[in-house]
Structure formats: structure tokens, C-alpha cells
Image (cartoon, rainbow, N blue to C red; front, side, top):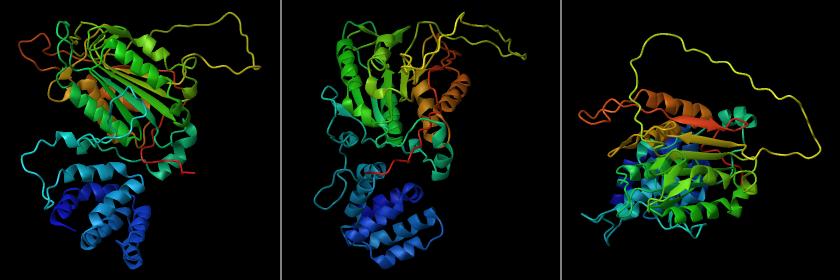
Length: 413
């Protein structure tokens, strides 16, 4: 193994030691002549998964010039693509002597070409591994076995498709500012969704008409039939009930949601459909109030129907069941965005998902996001935003727990 490959392994050693799923990988490397059966026995004699991974990482650099290449291929063959991508991203471009090219802009290596299932969507972002602190922690088999029957089926590979609509740049003459920091949201959310098992696609800086067309194509995709869930994220400017395209024209959020309801999207019936909206819902800033002690007042209400008419002849579905909507802010309120860290909502969302998806359902995690942002406060002395607050909100028509079970996939047939 050459010096650069050893350096890449060393840099990613802790990640690999914690994350490798080694059993199938070892057999692949035996098949390719990189490891012997005796070496595999030595590795598997260790008592813990971490110990086995460390033993493997100690042996691999001694196994010849093809060991690194076969490791990357083996990771892909055993569905550990995000680890393969981490190694390949660190590898960067090489010259004839297998050295990193000095001084070259490496941003072009973040996204790798991949066949796109939707011809109208030019930028798949599955390949981006994202910041290392956003690597999603995996569920254990014990947690899965104890909870799978409480929630939606969530084991397909991929989980489903996630479409990110990201608008950061607006046409000349459009009275909307550029969304500095918005690309961080796109990258971080795309990375976490990828690690959660979604095939993630990007539509970026399009007009309202183009976005609408892409959403319609996405909703009609026949492949939803074999997937367990769907995610749509809208990252742009907005007002109550609408979001903006690059040309300053609006799309009605209700119309977007309708594309995926039970009437219009039969391939997603009884499956969770998740919407995240990072956009303002008005021009008002939440100035907050001084905190005082005291219990919350409870307002009681009652809603009853005068008659009951149950029919069991033809099972029917409500038009909008099995949906969850997460909004960065409440009606009429502006949403906060940091030019260096991205929006408050997406920053909190991806961190909570990465840390807690292994053993919490989505509603619990969105409650945690609310808690995180409740404690935040804008610090911008001299501006109208100083001391302003934000409070996200989510609505749900989910009918079961929604556990994402990262790392747990159904057996291939």
C-alpha cells in the first residue's frame, strides 16, 4: 500500500473503527486475495466489533499495493458507500506519483456524477459525505427488533427519495436578497438524509415554473412504489403559504403538498411523506418576552359530530394521511439564517437527526429541534434583529411511530 493510501487510512481510522460492518467485507477481501482465512480468523477472534475493526485496520496496510483500492470497492459491494466516499473524497486527485495535487481547488470532488432517475433534476447529491460531525449514528439490531412493529416499515434500500429545492440566488430585478449561508443547509441536509438511507436529489436556483415541473415529475416517479418513505425540503425565501423561485414568482405550499397526497400519489399511500420548509412565513420578528414563573393556562374545547356513520364495505383513506410538516417558524414570522452556519432550523435539524435517529422517532426529534431553537437568540447589536427569537413548528398526520432505523436494511432478494 502506498504512502498516500496509508495516510488516508490513518486520517479516517477512528471513523472506520467505529463504523465498519466487517463480516461481509472480510469475505470479499478473501475472495479478492487481499486477506487469508487465517487473517480473518485472527480478526474475528476479537471480542468486540471495535476490536475486530482495529485488528483489521492494523493488518490491511501490509497487504500490498491493491489493498486500498479493494477496500474501497469492498465497502461499496457491502453497502457501506458513505465510508467508501469518505476515503475517496480524502484521496482527491492524484498525479503520476500518487500524490495530492497541490494548490488545486477540490470543490469539484465533493459531488460525483451518478445516473439520475429524474431527467429534470441535474444535481444528485448522494455522494457528498458532508462534515464528519454530521455522520449519522446507526440503530442497533436490538432497538430495531424491539420497535419495528410499532411504526412504519422503514427498511428498504434506499429508504426513499429525498428532493431538496434550494434557491440561494435570485434574478436581477427581483426584490429578494441572496440567501447567504443557504448552500450550507443544502449540503448538511443532503449529507444527513443520505446517511439515513435516502437517495437525495437537488433542484437548485430554478424559476417557480421549473420547480413546479420538477416537483410534479418527482411525485409521479413510479419508483416510489418500492420505497418506504419520501422527503421534500424547500429551502428558499417565502411568505405565509408560499415560497419563491429564482424569478421571484411564488409556489403555493398547499399545491405542493397536494401532489403527494393519497389522491394524487398512489405510490406513496400509507407511507410517510415528510416535508421540511426553511423559509419565512411573514415579515414579523419574534421579539420574545421576559421569562416569568407560572403555570401555563389550559384552554379546553370540544368537537363532536351529531351522527355516526361507519361503513366497512370499502376501506378508504383520508386525502392527507401519513404526512409530517416541519416549518422553520410559525405563521407570520420571519426565519433566522446565519451567513456562516446556515439557517437555525436546518442546523439544529441535521444535528438532532444525526445524533438521535438511531433510537428516537421523528416526532420526538422535531420536539428536540424546537427545544434547541427555543434557547437561541439573535446577537446583532444595532440591527432590528438583535435579541430576536425563532420558534419552529411541526404538524403531523402520521398514524404510527416513524423510526428511521439508520443502518438497518431489508435483505436483498
